[in-house]
Image (tube, rainbow, N blue to C red):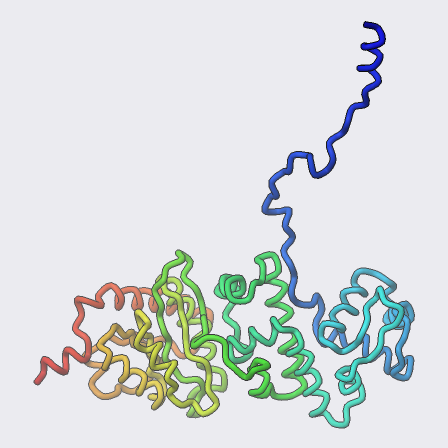
Length: 366
């Protein structure tokens, strides 16, 4: 009996292996979101390439020596700088490699034969980050919506997690400002590597109530007279129409800019499929008037607006309601116009079945 007890006492306790341990469910916070763009702008990152050129005759150089010239030390900030330079493809290697060397693109940047070659090198660096290239292509230029209208699109279209969206927005704008300081942004910058556009229209803002109603905006892409300064209609779109449409619970969209400003089939489709079309009659732009005619032919709801001082056109102004906004675009005037336009859009939609459309009015007048 005694021997049996000793035998039992001598039996070692067997610990469970890792695989045998009960697995704890992963919490949402345990999966780390992935950042898909650099921490630093192109202008800052080119300091790595400039240092190699200036202090080591363009030859591969040890990271600690580069850090010394920049008075940074081997810190995390220096790592982000070298990693960004690598991601823009200006240099090869990072803080944690033996050497950092200029890439072919980096050499064209720091040893340019002309200002144009330098500008083209910066543009190529921008395109080398897929996220920057794709967002630029999606919005056909530099005028992103305000960040409050951009967040859902960054997540759903480009996979940018919420915690990185503000950083992306700031860095994207810094890079575009740097590109513009070196020359005009070419149309080629707005193309993907296959030269194809993303989507049929541009998302300007999304309804805060997750609604599915779409308001398509038909308005001039550029100013055709001296009555309005360059960039005026971008300001109207960004600061007046988009916030008003969103506040009226619509997802605001508009057409991609085309170099020839021709009426494309995608625009016709948008004019037909949108729940509501907001038409800005300012300057009597021929393309906009054509788009208005198409929408009227579809016999679907249209919301008319124009800057105060715009002359009446045809008989539309007398038959359909038009909202006249203050052309100044000052913060004080926008405080009045945004809520007023929101109400105009909402009322147009509310009365879409009760109000007679222009097409019905014409038919009834026969």
